[in-house]
Image (cartoon, rainbow, N blue to C red; front, side, top):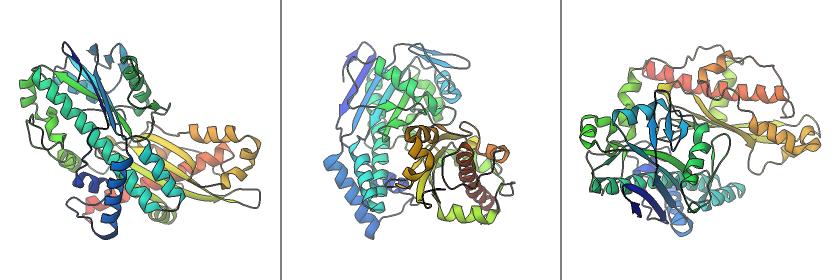
Length: 418
């Protein structure tokens, strides 16, 4: 762990990965305290063993040279970022610096999961995908523990990490944060890491994070919500100041105090019977540790020409927390793995790069709360293909309305206690 004065630069290649069973179970979608058995246990053990043999985890972190917290932004090494929550945290803790970190599970698990999907083994795909996600969370926790060790020896304290895509920090600032991290390093990162314009990282099983740094350790004892230990699951840490609290406990009271965020009686553009069927048959959602939600909608249609070839597209939407009104953070639409039907669309035949680029770049209502779908006026289009803008907008509308409907039903059940 090289150090220069107070500054720190940390590089770890293939660190020991010991994902807690309860954290993996949570990511798999099982309730707290659930014990895996049968086929699920077999798949979980297979994924863990596969990654142990083939994965290439890594961690890199470096302290920024300068930090300036302003009223409406913060400057890290002179580069501006906008996150009111991170700004407030740094200000309250009187942070004098930040440490920017990047972690990655490596591309191997992501590629293997893709192969399993193409081999029509969705169970293996899912368990390996979720284990790689658990590894990323574990690596971020490990990085925090290493930084706590260094800070303690220098009379400082590390704040809980915060990342683009968390509430009140637009994921679109992720490329800027990655650029800053690369600028401060003489050599390349332990592994290749890139950020798309949308903010999505490649490889996907990676994370960027900012850890605040303060010399006012007594202040953290008074501001208990700023003690990183409560959100850190690293059990053997000798610098623990408070017991670990599962993230779900930390926000429970706030969420319970909110009224309904979405209205199941909203005026949708299609009938509720269709929305209910799509929500049950085509939509899957996963809650994340930071309160965000990942939704995947499978669209099955046909081309309008070439004898109506079947095609399947996957819509992926990342929403912010319920407390923040479910803002639309990330969106993507692409052919499902193995789909070839889209290659028979007339626009694809004419200009494959053109139509696929248009599909990739269209992210309607990004940055808006999910309720914005109720006011979005778009041209109706019954075409099953993706050739025209109107057709693509129509499908995005159906996807977002289905997600809204599914979450609004949960709101109603929560209020009525069903």
